[in-house]
Amino acid sequence: MANVNTSSDPRSLSAAAYERLRKSEQNQYELREHFKDTLKFSKTELSALELDTEEKFREFWNESIVAKKQFDARRNRGFRKGAKNFVNAATVAWTSITPVLEILRGAGEPFSNIAFGTVAFAFTIAANRENMERRIVATLNCIEDRRPGIQLYRNAYQENGETNSRLQQAIADAYISFIEFCIATVTFHTRTSISRWFKALGPSTSLDDTVPRVEEAILNIRLICEELLNKNVAELKIHNRDLRRDNDSYKLEYIRNVMDLPPHSDATEYGNLERAREDVKREYRDWYARLRTPNDPLASVRNNQVFLSWPLRVLNMFDPSKTVWIIVDRIDECRNEPEDKSRQETRNLHRKTLLKFLVRLVEDESLRVKVRVLGVVNGLDWRAEEHRDEIDQMKKESIEFLPLWQARHVSV
Image (cartoon, rainbow, N blue to C red; front, side, top):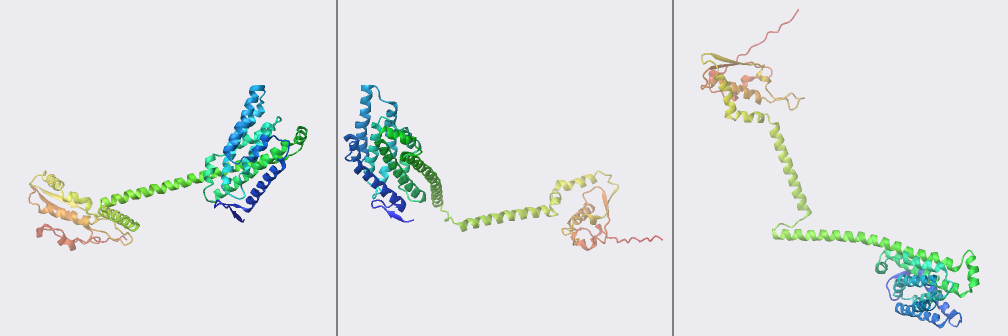
C-alpha cells in the first residue's frame, strides 16, 4: 500500500488513512460554513468553533458550561441529573481524547487544529440541550473505560516498528471516528424535538452508526497498546539479560588482570576441558588396572610381617621332635580365571606365589619343627619344573620334582 509522508513528522500514514483524515478535515470546514450564520445556536455556542488548543477549550468549558450549570443549579435547584452526568462525562472524555488530538497535530498535513473547535462545539450543543440523548453520555463514558494509559500510547507513537505503525493507524481511526461522532451529535440536536423522537424510533440514525465505531476504535488502541507493552517488557528482559552478562564479563576481565591470567577464549576453555576429561579417564584406567591386577589382593599379606608370622607361630606349636607334613593337592589350580575364555589363557602368579611360600617354610631355620611339603601338580596344566628359577629356592635340596604317570585302566 502506498504511503504518504507527513510534512512535519517523519512518520507516514497509509494512503487510505490519509484520505480519510483529509475528508474529515473537509467535513469540519463544511460544518462551520453551514452553521456560521444560523440562528439555531447562540453566540457562545458558535464561539466554541474558534477554539484551537486544549487550554482554550478548558477555559471555555469551565466558564461557559460548568459555571452556567452550577449557577442554574443554585438559582432553580433544578439542575437535572442527566445534564450533570453529561458535563462530567464530557470533561473526562475530553481528557481521554486530547492526547489523540495532540499526537495528530504534530503529524502536520492534512490535520489541523480545527478538531479542537469541532469537539468543543459538539460538547457545548449537547450540554445546553434539555433533551439529552443517553447514547451520547454512554459513548463518552465508554471512551474513558476503554482508553489505555495516555502516556503509554503517546510514547508508543514515537517508536518505529510494525506494531507501532498499527498503533499510528489506530489513533488516526479513533480521531476520525470521534469527529464523525461529534458531527453526528451536532446534526442530531439541530432537529426539532419531534423530529429527534421519530428518528429515534427508526432502525438506525447517523448517531447510531458512529457510536459503535468510536467504541471499537478506542478499544483497538487499548489492545494494540497492551501488545506493545508486552513486547517492550520482553525486550526489556532481553536487554537486562545482556546487560547482566556484560557486567559479569567485565568482572571476570578485572579478576583476570589482577591475577595476571591469560586471556579467556573458547579454544582455551575447550582445551582445558579436554585435558580434564583425559585426566579423569587416566585416573579411572589406573584404578581399574590396580583392581584387576592379580597380585594386588595378596600384596598386603605378602608384604606384612605380621601376616607372614602367623603360619610360623602355628607350626611352632607342634612338638619339635616331630615332622610336620603339609600336603597340597593340585597347586596348578591356584590361578586366575582366563581373561579371554575363547583362548583359554591363564596367569600363574598365584600358584607361583604359593609354591614360593611353601619352599620358604621348608628352608626356614627359625622353626623348631621340621616341615615337609608334598605338592601335587598336574603336569598337563602347569609344568612346574620349568619355573624352578622363579621360586627363589635358597637350598638345592629343598625342592625335588618327581614325575609320576597314572596308568590308564580300560574296562572290558
